[in-house]
Image (cartoon, rainbow, N blue to C red):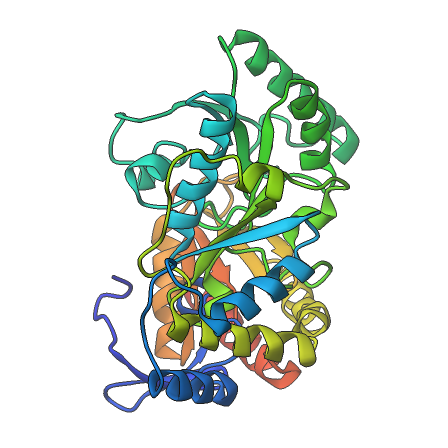
Length: 409
């Protein structure tokens, strides 16, 4: 749990939460990028209450109107041709499903993943997670090959131009493929790595990968659990920055605004290719689907993607202007910002300092701000407020972050 003295969150409203002792916090983490619009969004609470008065559970063996309407809206905004949607209860289960589709299609248990990645906490998704802090066992149902491209700050290709970086990563991918025996099912990649500390390669990298993959009949799975729904500001999906369309997209977190919701989007040719029975007991629940549908409609009607593009630079510009001796890198897009903390005077890239990250986390809490933490060494602050964040709140949070960073320096 976070903090030396963990806090009990009692209630929330807008971009703020209150603990059980009555202390108010500006929320810059949203329950791990899950409270996407705002806390206690009236449209969501109303939809959930009305649905709870009708029926709460049916399973995917039966139709229910909220599930069907939600899937239709997701398919419409997916960017995937001839899209079908399968709903699950989490991002982990969504990635499990995508891996099942890919492995079944190519009759292969070989998977490509990016170094520093995170895709969930089930046995299969731990197996493709390129981050030892979240992978407790070497046992695996998959043969996983890890390729470069998930980050630039600590990459062996750091210092190269974006074009040179992409070329080096494509060469690494081809070399890895040449060394792998037999068919490979898929490459799974986060457009911006979440748990890894909001790291990414240059725009266009995954599109360059896709050219190589399609020559060899390998699927591209875009893990949009944290980048989806307009959080990056510039696009609705993270993959849209890469000039190619993935074969499968997974999503979760933000669409449910705290309700247990995830899912997979794929063309009918892939989704219908599974030969075995497959259902989800709780995926597509009338209750969660009703809430997620209200949340998605609110997001689109209020163009919160545009708000992320407008408000995000307040935080980016302010953090980059600090020139703090403990800040090694500020990165991300929109309202998805990573601040990598390093030992002062330790060079570039600096020595990771998880101790400083913990100190800043505590300092923010003491001043009324909640932020997250991540990265391979646990030294990256993760800033991801609800997408309705106002400019005034962004400045308030920036002031608190600045004071916490100065206090830890």
